[in-house]
Length: 300
Image (cartoon, rainbow, N blue to C red; front, side):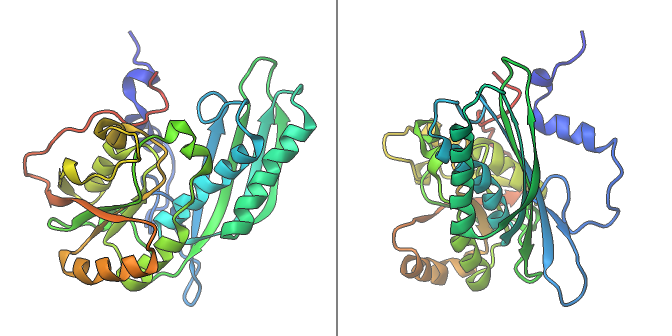
């Protein structure tokens, strides 16, 4: 029997697919990081490239407030730029919609997109509109460029054994509505790269159970997790904090030497947002705990 996408899973599928494609022989960052990175030449900022798609009944419901759907579409990409230490620049929006959808509903989606662009920067540069067959799900696809100072670029691969593992905010419970209203941690990311540059960083889009092993693997490390320290959204269990996707908080690693000063400075800069140590990177040869759960688009 031929293996299905559900049996293979997202990470293994991506690995198999990119092997079949021509790639930049010397990329600053490519498939496997939050964004691709393009060197525009000496004296110019690095360019970030990102694409992201939202599918009805997978990432949003048509019964959700349309303005919040639009906000989420742009905010997801903005969060990826923040994960690299960067800021958004130009956006391309492709929408594939059922022909019977009300015009006012679609206009409200775009108002939500505009809300997010105005809040975090970036402009609409173009896009495409098309329809889906009757009964098919709608889709919103965003392609965008961002910018980052080359001294501020943070990848997933820079962590080292002994580095602390930290998260911003609280985890879990996105399905109750947070996934439509979250705030991309752009200001926090910019502050971090300027005051205590993380060794590695990404955003938590697929849940701690999926994303922490990805960061550790990219850094050539293992990890030790202190479950008692994981900050939970009010009303959420520890399992939900580890397994739920779409938190869109920052997951980062940091030299322990930087933590005492950073902790004090962070509280002064962001008094309403926690920054919590939840573990430590270890040597890859050390015995590892297995995290289960997290979001995979091909699982049921």
